[in-house]
Length: 371
Image (cartoon, rainbow, N blue to C red; front, side, top):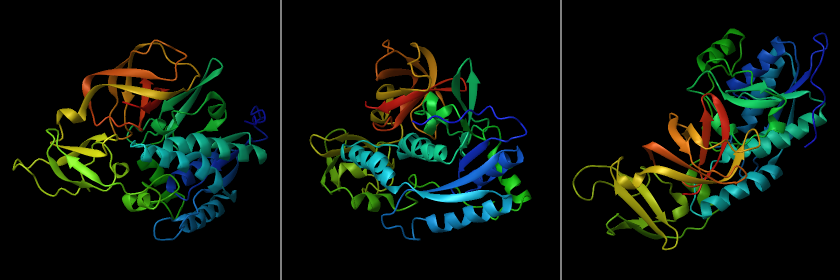
């Protein structure tokens, strides 16, 4: 990775910051904040998806117009760059491989590590940037020659989970202007300064692909492999279209309709038997098959470059959950894998998702859940 220029710029000569702008309110306000702080700011709009790029599901055209409008209002330069080839090679190909193997990957995690903080970072360097910035809700702290990744102060919007694979080199010259600002205040700022996207809905779709019907989207890239749907006692209750199209804990879209035994409990995807192409479902949110007190993770990535010592921490096994107390029991600091145990059962621990470890507000890193 090409290093940044020195960021020790005198106050009379503001350092140049290239900020990723999506057309949303967060990156727009972040760009305005940087401009207010005296930085020389350039906005960079990344286009990373071209397949069937229609207005129905992918809003890239409108997003670009929003970026241009915001840049004009706050008085910064902006350019668009196409990383579609990098995205398909580094993110989407892995995304499909994971689904085909029966796991449920998190493309946003890989997208941050491979596109937003790699391809984007390299392009920013070519523009002469001293630092890059994004509208993520997270913080960085420079401590004794290293960089710590911290949670945002607004716990409801914290995105450190998605950033846990970033390295020291990637974090060294990164700014997160929104790290100490509540989301409600971000929208208030946007309205006060006259941003037309102040009330624009937050994106919840696949990173850069948009909010498409997910099963329909996957079906274009992965083959259907029908097989039986069974209950824990082995009773066949239906047929699935392919294990790749289901994830542990899934309640909607299973296709079973009402209760099979009259108790009224909803059906949940509980296990996937890849060897026998069998989908297992269980009734009730708290069914034992949906609960786990331990997990194993592979492909570990630690923010400071080395695994933390075994001990007591907290962890997230999916983005939208409260941190859970856990014990890191792996004793090999150089190992790319680790194990966690939890005093309280974790719900629907899903292979392919990320297990992210925290020490208080410090995000230590994490790995891909394997079991």
